Amino acid sequence: MKIIILGAGQVGRSVANALVSEANDITVVDQNPHLLLELQNRLDLGTVRGHAGHPDILRKAGAEDADMILAVTNSDETNMVACQVAYKVFHTPTKIARVRAQGYLDYPELFEATPIKATEDIPEEERLPPPSFPVDVLISPEQLVTDYILKLIEFPGALQVLDFADGRVRLVAVKAYHGGPLVGHELSTLYHHMPNVEARVAAIYREGEVIQPQGDTRIKAEDEVFFIAAAENIRSVMSELRKLEKPYKRLIIAGGGNIGRRLATSLESKYRVKLIERSQERAREIAERLDMSIVLHGDAADEDLLLEENIENTDVFCAVTNDDEANILSAMLAKRLGAARVMALINRPAYVDLVQSGPIDIAISPQQATIGTLLRHVRRGDVVQVHSLRRGAAEAIEAVAHGDRNTSKVVGRAIEEIKLPKGTTIGAVVRGDQVLIAHHDTMIESEDHVILFLVDKRRVREVEKLFSASVFLL
Image (cartoon, rainbow, N blue to C red; front, side, top):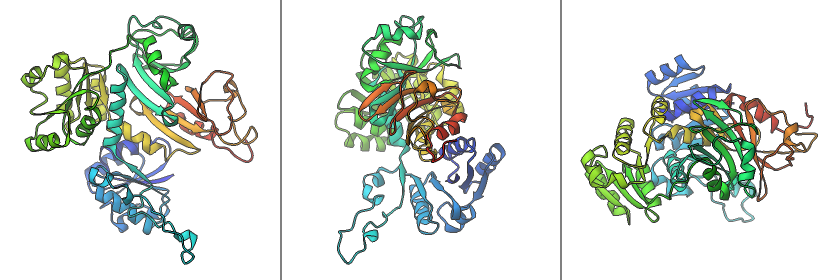
């Protein structure tokens, strides 16, 4: 695909890195020559310096024959105008924009077409005018990160919780601990432990190396285990790998920005929430908006403040300020002072790898949360969901099977007959409202939603070909 990425910030660079590795024709537009030069030196892509919303700059970037525009600059207004120009001037098929300001997101009609009342005077093709801003896909990284954190709080002990098939199936990552019923035993015993619960282990990571799970594979303590199960069975499977943690009650959120405020708003009705904000003006504004949360004016890395607020009795400390270093330091301090679980929002990819294995329990990358949503619209074949895993090295995909045995390489075949790329596992099949955990003899039918785990995302093109029906099957 020919894709133009507007904005060479953290999100733009992460997306460019992910898409270039899949042999796409990428051009990045930004006003900062240093960022563009860094990208050119590291990746095989084109760059154009200039304002992303100007038609002449978009033309120079190749918008006349581009398949997709990804507008991810730091300016909502620039992103929306760029999509307007791409639609009106260049007729770009797919336009994706990052919009962060809640003031815009509160008015979805800005991005939706409203049908005109049908009359004989108006031809049918003219009854649905374009929206005010013709954005095909609207992305709010702050909302994606908020949703990501909410799932981690809902499932205490999970490292990652990802939804497929509208939430009917979930992929969960947990760290196996000493004492878990399944730890030290072969995976084949999972069924005997839980005869009425079906689940499938998709991958195991041990000391950074991936292990392809087989029936005789033994899980060891400290393994990072990815498993797939129906949503209602997640807690049961987690209990086989580690002692289930009690539901969280007391939460401290460091940072009153868009993410911090959204988290507090979503959590305050079920949990005892405290929010720490450095800006006195911002703290006062947030306190007026929240109903039950306690808003504190202060520094989240202030040891005296944390002790005063009983950090030792806190179930989750979540640092979500705009400063990576502040998030890391405050989370490490909170852990040392007794917080049961700490999370830190970290923008720099290099920092994520450094802190994940240390005192910080979960490092949250906004880029990884955002990239999955973007990749869903880049994938060939009928791919309806994509989640980027293991800092972009692995991927989980929900693909829809179409056709019949003559036109598809998967429909009408048992899983053991399908020639899956190396390192690829089919974890579950969703057929209507029915969730089928994958076995070797599970048959794939047309319109099934198939959940796959790829330990090597470089194999994604091979998976796409499997799910691309054709008239003459090669």
